[in-house]
Image 1 (tube, rainbow, N blue to C red):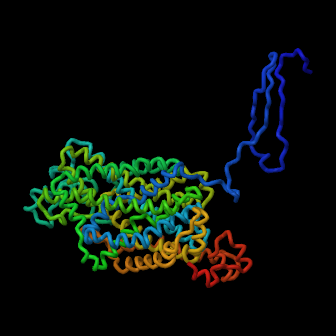
Image 2 (image 1 turned 180 degrees about the horizontal axis):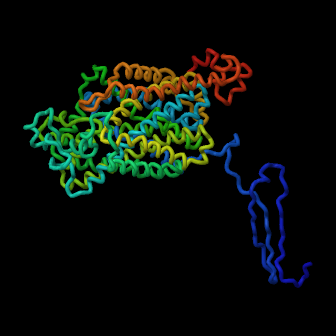
Image 3 (image 1 turned 90 degrees about the vertical axis):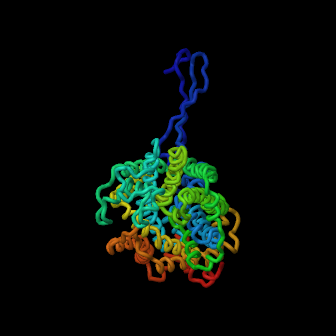
Length: 618
């Protein structure tokens, strides 16, 4: 019993009243508050409180994480869309197909197909806040296309990371007093190696420059392989570089957009800094202006050639990154009211402007090479890996302070590649963890599993014959299959879900309904464009080759199986969905093409897709 003189602490315990909710059974926290101290006696108040619950949305689900800043999202999209192809493909296509005249079909297809599809994917992901597969709760029968694009992104990762590892290998090799691709006196050189100055005395069939032999014989060691059926063991140098790339990818992605959104501040901006520095250096070189004039020379007669229009359409399809599920994944982390229309215009425009700008950098150096060696520009102009790993390093090697220029050039390639690889990986990770909810709590472990699996399969591309595997994957993994995937995606949204309903969703987000132009593109123009591209892709298919090496029939069969494995997800999932839904076929079809949130309307016989108005409205 306490007396008045007892110098003890007097406690006042206040216990929260019992509630009938389930939260009262959860963990509690004790809050101890010092009230006052009087005459040596401390009065305190203790409260038993419930921790603040995790934020949830109206459906009772945990709120989706969002980008830390708006600029994180924009840089991520730009970093993904602006990749190595902007440097090594667009400038060459422009030069080969009429110079400035090539911009006519390029911009035409950009406006009628590129931007509308880009806008469509950003809006789709942002409204539904799911990855590439989960967004198809708006029309469940089309969920297979979500798995199609996830598989394509995964397949591309098998060989795209290898390109980054080549750039890293070159970067390490550049920290020398003399670059290793300058002379023909190295252990990897063949008797056919010849400096440019001596090329006139060597047969065109056999001559090879030091830079070309360094890439093929010093880096790839392709001379130690007889073909794709003779791969050999992984090269430890390239394997080490590949491992570094995988580690960089993991720690950029393991915490989701919280980490990747910060990494792109470097990887998405660095290429612009380096391109500008290289351009300032390039235009001072002799012959640079001639190269730029050749790049911009206008030949409108080339527009009469159907191949020019096909190449412009193909470039649009692949340069914007539509169909990989990356834009859907990135935009799913946006705030619901984010202006995705403005984002689509800004980021797609920046992508195209970057392609055009990089042409000045490339052709200033190609013009320099042409003048220095007194050969025609078309003798040095090429696209693909040969440009950035042979021609450009060769040009850099002739400059004063060549090691410095080589270092910054390969840093640019590294950053161009790494954020595009991050986007592809994020598409796979987000797409799968949104589809299989239990993976949400184990994102770090699942990310580790994906990157390690990618690394193990990529080892095939760093063997002596790895270039043959790389060529096969590059030819089949994301060619016809990605065009097919975007076609089905466009049909599913514009026709089955409904372009009017999709427009309502956008208006709900940004307060502005898409104009008639966008709706017409989504419903008619873009699907027709994509159907045309799929047909052209099949009609103009040529088996892959590497130089004079032709792949055996079994290798082409493996390639087609790879391409078909992603495309067949569309019909396979549709069949699965129709077979697992209850009721007669008509009821099952109604459920399969109706948004999951409206299945109760199907029970009442109200199916929008069974009305003529649904198919005619724009």
